Image 1: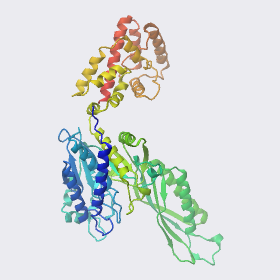
Image 2: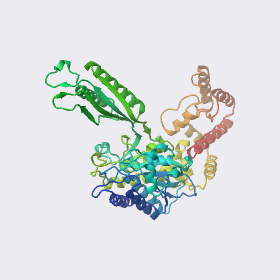
Image 3: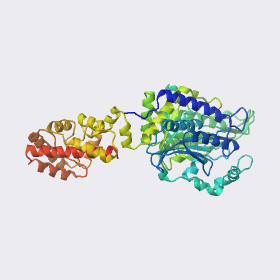
Image 4: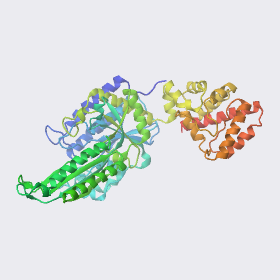
Length: 582
C-alpha cells in the first residue's frame, strides 16, 4: 500500500524552490545592499503579500490577521477540523541573513505544496503563519506576532515607540490595522493540535556532528543582569598594588570564574559577559567603577538557577576579598520552554528516516515557539547552517540539507495530521505490523489484520480483528503466553508488549507480602495443572480480586479452562488494539 512520502526528487525540487524564494524575500529590504525588514514596515507588508501569493498557488485560503501576521489554511477532509500549525517569522534584524525565520515559512509551504500536488487532504488541516515580529528590532519588544495568536499582548505594548517616535499603535494604523482589534488575532485552544517550527540552528553543533538535521529538546531559559563592581579610583602611579580597590581587576577575576564554572556545569549551559563599561576610563587612573552585563541560558530552569546562584555568590566573595562592593540586578527573565516529547519523537522518527541518525539538542536562541508553547504543544526541527553564523549576511545553508529538511518535515506533518486508523491504512506493511504486534505475540493473527486493510472505521477494524481471534486454539494460546508474565510479576524488558503488561498489572500491590505469596503459590499450582501461565484481563481489578479468580479457575476442567483462557486472551488483545488507535 502506498505511503505518503515525499521522494528524493520531489524534495530536491522543493529545496531549490525554497532557496530561490529566500532570495526573492531577501530583495525586500529597507536598506539597499543589506537585508533589513522590521515589523509593520512597508517591506514587511510587501513580504506578507508575496508569501500570501505563494500560499494561494498551493490551494490555501489566506488572510492577514489583526497584528500583521500572514496566515494560510489548507483544509482537511472535514471542514473546520483542528489544524497543525507550521511557521516561523518574516521579520529580520538589521543587516540580517536570509534564512533566519524565512527558511521555516518557505519549507512549510513545500509541505502543503506536496499535499496539493498529490490532491491529498489529511484528517487535520494545515495552517501556516508567517509571524510579523519575532526579533523585536523595531520596538524593542519581541514575539508580537506569536503573542497576538496566543492572545497575550500586554496592553502597554501599544505605547512602545521605535527610534523615530512612532508607537506600536500608530504603526498598526499606518499598516491599515486597528489597534482596538488586536484581540481578534487570538486563536482558540481547540483550533490547533500542535505547532512545528523549522529553523536554522544558529549554532555550530550540527556542523560539528556532520549532520544536516537535529531535533530541539527545549528552548533555553535566560536571565540577563546588570552587574556592578564599585571600588575606588586612584592615581595609577602612586597607589601601591597591595591597597588598591580596583573594580576592573575584580571584574576580570569574576569573568574568568564565570567562564570556567559554566564550562564545568556541562555543554548545555552558557554564560556571557557581553558589555563592560569602565570608569573613569583613563589610562593613568585605577578603575573605580565597572558596569557589566551577564547573560546566562539553560534548557532547564533549575540548572540555570543553580549556576546563577553560584556565580553571584562568587561575585560577592571577590568583592569582599578586595574590599569593594558588588551588586547585580535582573532586568530580563524568561523560563525555559521544553518541546513536547511526543512531537520530539515524531520529528526524530522522520529525521532518522532521511538521515539515518537523529541528534537532539537545545536551542540557545529564542523563537516564536516560546509564545506558542503557552497554548499548544510545540516541536522544532533544526537545519545546519554554515559555521553556525546567524544574524549576519554570511548566514548560509546548503541545498542538500534543505532537501532532507523538507522531506523530514513533510513526513512528520503527514503522520501527525492523520488519525491513527488512517495512518495504519496508509502505512507500509512492516510499519503496520510493528504498530499492532504488541497487542499479542501471534504473528499470523497480526499479518491477517494488516492484510485486510483498508478499514473504513475503527469499528470495522475491531470487528474484523475480533472475528480473527475466534480461530485461536490451544497452540495459539501457548504461543501467546510464552512471552506473557505471571500475574503478580513485573514483565521484563522494555518492549512495547512488556510495557503494556506492566500497565495492566499496575493494580497488583506487590508490597503486600501475603498477597504476593498467595499469587506465587496459586500460579505454581495453576501451571502444574494446566501447563501454562494463568491469564486474566487484570486492568481494573485489584490484586485480591485477581487472586480470587485464580483460585476459582483452578477448579475448572482442562477444556473449560482452555476456553476461559482463550477468552481472556481475546479480551486483552482487543483492549490493547483499541488503545493503539485511541
